[in-house]
Image (cartoon, rainbow, N blue to C red; front, side):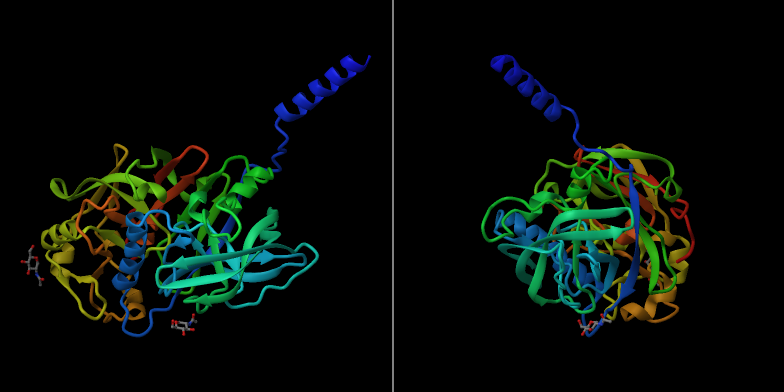
Length: 405
Ligand SMILES: *[C@@H]1O[C@H](CO)[C@@H](O)[C@H](O)[C@H]1NC(C)=O
Ligand SMILES: *[C@@H]1O[C@H](CO)[C@@H](O)[C@H](O)[C@H]1NC(C)=O
C-alpha cells in the first residue's frame, strides 16, 4: 500500500502543480492618472527630455551598472496616479514611468507601517540620471484601485530622495530587468506591480494599455492605465503589434524600430531603433533627423522654450509626419505636431506663438536609441506594453486627428 499511496500523492502533487493555480479574478482593471506641470527656472522642456535620453543611452555604453535607472527627475510634465500602500492604506502620488521599474514611496508623504508591512532587511538604491533615491525595501499591500490590490509587493521606502519635489515616488512599469542590481543583497530582479498582478491572478495577461488624451488645460485627469488588457473605449480600429526591437540599448526598454517621413516623400529618419516612453514629454529624434525636419517644415529654434517655433503661414502649410512601425503608418497631423497653444506660458513660451513638439535628441543616428516617442506622441495613439509576448501595440484613438492644440 505504501508505494501506491505515495504514487498517488505524487500524482496529486503533479496535478496540483500542472493545473494552473492562478484564479483570475477579472481580466483587467484601469487606473486613472493626472497631468501636472512644473517647468521652473531656466531649464527648458527639451533640455529636461535630453537629460533623460542621455541617461538612457549612457547606461548602454557603460553596460548594466548596478541600480542605474533613468531620469524621471526634475520633470516638468508629470503624470501621477494615486496609489495606496499598507492596510489601511496611506495614499501616495506616484509618477508613472515606463522607463524604470522599481516602485517606491516616501519622497514626500512618509511611509506609514501597518500590519501588512514587512521589512525585507534589504536596502535599495536607484539613480535616475540627475536624481536618485535610496532606502529600505519592504513587502506591503499596494492598492492601485478597488479592483487592483497586490499582496506582498516589493516596494522601496525612501530615506533619501533627490529631485522628486511634488511627488511621493514612482510607479515603475518598465521591463522588470531594469530592477536588476537595485537591491543590496542580490542580483535578482524585483517583480513589478504588473508582474505581481498577473502572478496573483488579478489580471489575465501580463500587459498594460495606456491612454493619454490631448489637453488644453492643467492639471487634468486625462490618462488611463489598464492592467491586464486594453480599454476599447480609448482606441479606434484594431491594435497592431510589433516585436520589441533587437537593437540595444533600445531593446532594454519599450523599444521599437521605426521610420519617419514628412509629407508623402521627405525622409526624416531611416529605419532605426528607439523607444516609446511615458517619462519623455516631446518627440525626440536624432540630431541629423531633427535638422532635416527643421528645414522641411521651415521652423526656427526658439531660445525661451528650446523648442522649434513656426510662423502661422508655415504652420498652415505643415504636412503630417508619418511614423512607420512594423509596417503600419501612424500619422501625426500638423495639429498634433504643435504644443497646445493654451499651454504656451506653462513652458516659458509666448501666447500666440506656435511651437513644435519634435525636438533634438542630442546625438546623431547610430546610437541604438535614435528617437523617443514621448507623451505628445502617446496622446494621439493608444499603446499596449505587452510584457508576456515581448511586443508593443499601437492603435489610433478618437483624438488621433483632433485639432485641440
Ligand atoms: C516645482 O519645482 C520646484 C523646483 O524643482 C520645486 O521646488 C517645487 O516644489 C515644485 N512644485 C510643485 C508644486 O511640484
Ligand atoms: C517658412 O518656411 C520656409 C521654408 O519652407 C522658410 O524659408 C521661411 O523662412 C519660413 N518662414 C518663417 C517666417 O520662418
